[in-house]
Amino acid sequence: MIDLSTELAGLGRLYDQLAARRHGVVIAFMGVGEGCGVSTCARAFARQMAPRLARGVWLMDLDFYANSQYRVLCSPAAQRFYGAAGPAWVTPEGEPLFWRVHPALVRKDGSSAGDRFYLNMHRIGSHALFVSRFRNDLLRHGQQVMLHSSAPYWARMRRRAGLAIADAPPLQRGGAGLVVAPHADGVVIVAHPASGDAAVHALRTRIEGRGGRVLGVLYNAAPAFAQRAAARAHS
Image (cartoon, rainbow, N blue to C red; front, top):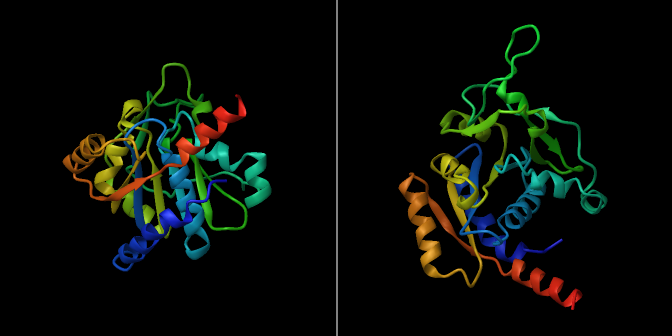
């Protein structure tokens, strides 16, 4: 596991300032492109904050078709370190959600399957850390997941969790981050030190253009280190 506690310490202090004004806080993580380590940073912040927060941390993976956060935290190595994943349970009741499955699945009795039941949460170990898993295995041929703006959903999340972290895929793979950004208390941009100011500025402009607030930029050199280590191992 990569230790990013030093890099994320300032974000923890910023969380304290935001939490002083709200019941709970929503922070989104977005990267300037592929390979910046957005999911690594989001997961590290979730693990860092979970022992502190009585109402827990919800790590929401917005890449519904990959579920990479769930897969990593349920890996044998992670479970030996953090503990096993608990049983699935669905997200808090209430409408509207920020996703829809279209067309809706109609059961044999003629009723429609609710969209809420596609998104499960799992507790990881003994900490109050919960990770999402979107049940894309339940999707039928022709069904698609559609995201839309839903301020009420994130308001309910603040009442339920001490901190909700939205891990968004890069914009090259979809606009989930921009859908959530206006309803988050802030967005953390994750960049590689070599990303360049222009790429960071372009993402900031798109976030702010949708009404989001950028909290800052986290320059993550961990992906480059991991790539160099892998190259040495294969040389």
